[in-house]
Length: 195
Image 1 (cartoon, rainbow, N blue to C red):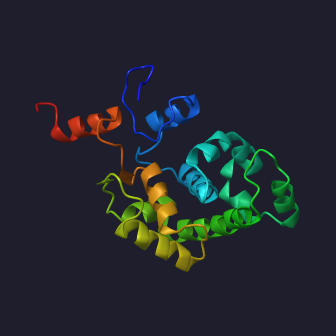
Image 2: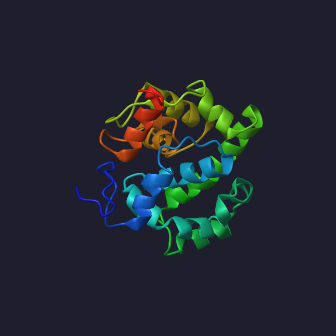
């Protein structure tokens, strides 16, 4: 694939979509510890179910507006009137079950924050704070375990494939493909400056 800036990227990054390129280059796979950003990403990943990430990413600003900046406290308080207005919002994915899941998942997210001190602490405890490097998978024992735990806590739209994509996006799993300039940068970093 030919990139205008001559940097090689993962095959999934669409060279015709600047928003997607920016996401690949500056967000995807970078370890994330901020609860607000982790929550936004979790909700967006849930909306991705059955769709492409590019579709969701293209609607991200509309989602931010519609879901009050992804403030979990505000979303926890959504009533039926707000849910109905979301179902009529043409800027977002208007799936009744996913919208309801966003509210229910916000409540579980807040309960995890209360239990663990932060959602970040909960998420990163699964790997003892380490980034896992693996490429070419859509699920793993890690995503199976996190998915199972979140479902037991009451979250929905958090199957193992969605959770694997979430863990990749949040940088818990580093999956930049061989040849991608970011994978090459990771490899140089791991080898150290004198290799």
